[in-house]
Structure formats: C-alpha cells, structure tokens
Amino acid sequence: MRIYISKIIPYRLPLRAAWISAHTSFTMRRGWLLRLETDTGLTGWGDCAPLPEHEVEEELAVLAQSLINLDLTAARQWLNSARMHPAARCAADVGLSDLAAQQAGLPLARWLANDATKQVRCNAALGALDENASKYAQAAIATGFEVLKLKVGLRPVKQELVMLQQLVETLPEGVTLRLDANRAWNMVDAHYFISGAAGLPLDMLEEPLAQPDLIRLAELQAQTEIPLALDESLPELGVGQVLAAAPVQRLVLKPMVSGGLENILATARQARTAGMASIVTTSVDSAVGTLAALHLAAALNNDLHHGLATSSWLEQDVGSAPHPESGVLMVEELAGLGFNPKPEILA
Image (cartoon, rainbow, N blue to C red):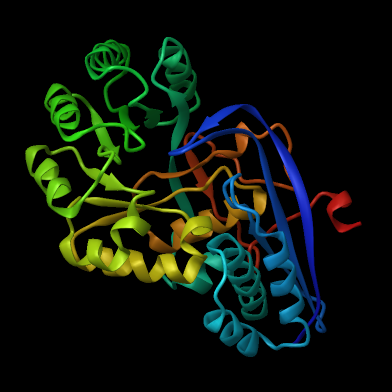
C-alpha cells in the first residue's frame, strides 16, 4: 500500500467566544487538514493546527509532497527522521496512523493499545473564573459533566479565592473543579492561592508558576494534596528532566504541541512509571484533531477526565466531531480515525 495523493486543505473555524491560552487569545482557529490517499482506496486524515502566531503552511506543503509514493513503513521512517514544527508532524503522524489502523481493521485507539477503552470521561471547558462562572457551571452539570475546568490567574489572588469559594458553594456533591493558572503567579501568590484553596473540591491545578523550575514545583506539590500539573512549560523544562524529577502529579499532553500520538504515548508511559498521570487535551482543534486526541485518551485508558470537550466552542467544523453525552465521549467501532468530512472538504 502506497500513498499516491497527499493534499493539504486550509480551514478557518470561527469560535463562539474568545479562547484564552497561555500566551494569547483567539476567536478564529486556523489550520490545515492533511489528506492521504492510498493506491488501495484508503484515506487517512491529519490535522495541523498550530497556535496563531506560528506559520507552517510551506513546511506542511513540503511534508505532504515528501510522502507521495511511499509505503507506510517508508513514510513513517521519513517522518521519524525529519525535523519540523510539532503541529505539522502531528498531522502526518495521525494521517499515517489512521491509514495503518484502517489497514488492520481496528479503531485507531485499539491499534495504539490493545486495552484501549471505548469510553473517555471529559471535563467541561468553561472559560475564565468570572461573574458568569456559576451560570456556565450549572449548565455543564445539567448535561452530565463532573469535572469543570476554569482559567484562573486573571485577577488578584485574594479576589479569585473569594470567587472560587462562592462558586464551590453552588456545586453539588461529587462535582470538582480543574483550574488552569497559565503561569500567572510568582511563588508567593502560588503559595497563597494553594493554601487558600485547601479543602475545596479541586481536581487539579495547572501551571501555577510564571517562572517554573523543578525544585519550586516540587515544593508547591509537597504543600498540597491538590494534583499540580504541567502543560505549556513542558518544552521549556524539558520532558526528560520532568520525567526524571517527577515534581508534580500530572502532565497535560496535547498532540498538536507534542508532535503526534506516538510521542505522547511514549511520554505518558514513562510518566506513569515515574508516578505521574497524564491528561490528553486538544488545542481547540478541528474534528480531525479532536478525534485523534479522543483515540489517544482511550488508548491511555487511565480513567481520568480528559480535555476533549472543546468542539462546542467552534461555530463550524470540517466534519463530524465527537460530542459528549453525560460528560463522556464514545470511541466508535470504525476502522481508523473514523472521520466523516463535510462534502466541501472533499471538493
């Protein structure tokens, strides 16, 4: 089986509201689909959706051209030896994995891991901790979500702790909050927030430090039973160094940032050996990227809530995206990724 067509398809997907990330916010998700067709009639899909400040179209075009006439083994070997932006690598990795799973007649999750689960629990992504948080929280709870994710670090620490306490008082038993500070605090503020949040139903606190280092992160984690997590600071700290030191309890892993599924699987397995759990999240990706992240989370099969319920933030999409029922996403029994594109994508 050889790849005989390799095509990139640009897309622009408006969001229903601004998404706040570590270093920017955006209201439009821009990216490219990678479509791989083989001489046996199979079609594989990948998603390249870097953050807005990164431009990778030329690199992706070279990648697409390089895959033509290669069989899957040669294509994988070429990919493993090439240097490229992680989002471009992710597109190729997912596309090739999609084809390999289809060839094997397996859902991508089960091709990645024999013991992959069919159900993945998700957190609801509510946006910022602000005056609307309680309204959004109640709406998410009404649809079955048990873990609610909020951005913090946007206001003074004392003010946010008051708002957090007020929100907690409105939550039913069994519902927990997952907070993401996006590297907002110095050590003093982080200590203050963590101390003030003691006893509250918090599932996790991501990226508390503006200038993280392994020693200070370990000090913070030792201070609290709340699982601390690393996300955007992983490349800066070095994944190998983090795995060796295990300064926090969890890692947040994004295929679009890590360069694909193979890289995350390897990292997550090493993290588990080191005593850290892994959460898979999207980067507010298209349906292709979200499906890939879902299959990856299913392959990890760690029964944690993953950050995959982001398709509802998009006003439109490139095809059928997975949508949670009662806070759970199901992996369909379809070979490969299971992506069904809109007709205009195929034009």
